[in-house]
Image (cartoon, rainbow, N blue to C red; front, side):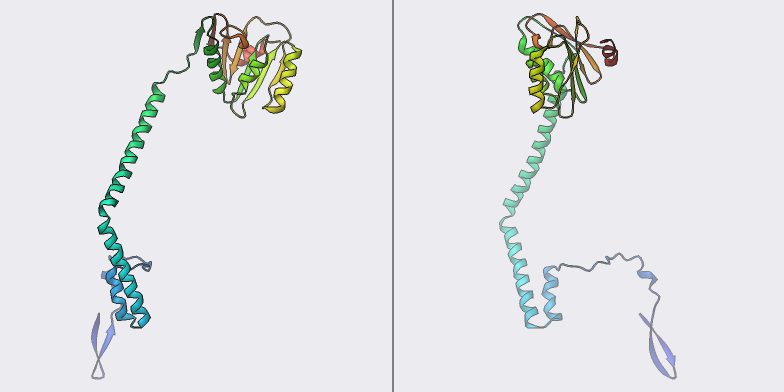
Length: 237
């Protein structure tokens, strides 16, 4: 905008610097890096060189080819989009089913009794206890053998394992061979014979009705106790 000004009998044009009424306009300070087909078609009128005209024609041809491709394959693209949406919905349903199955699946009971002959059930039950350990496993059992070492290989990486048992030369030989290949299991000699067996998993104490290696060969039970692990360990002497 401009306004007229009379100076020495002549009319001059003075620019108006005040453009406050344009403050509300929204614009991007970033220069555009793309043109529509209409913008490209206007380039030859600005850049009249032959190279600019040829480039504009090739770009317009690309726009036309792309539009033709979209029109010819519209149904295919729509079907692909529909399949993608269907796949997402299917994945969500599967996740919901798996979550429901996990919620409704039977949890490990704190008390379990095994009739005579249920060797596998007892072994699987205690194996799940071992797998569930997060920090430590402590077994207090008068008599252990290589079967116990095999079960303890099921524990997670970084979980410490200690066995309190009576001296047994064959077991110590097996333990030494085990520790050369697998994460170390610590051996602690029991100062005297203990009647009962206990399995400590993290901060929980489980009473074992039979030696771990003999679970299920006869009627036995596993029961979670409310006593603290340190109380049991302190009574070993």
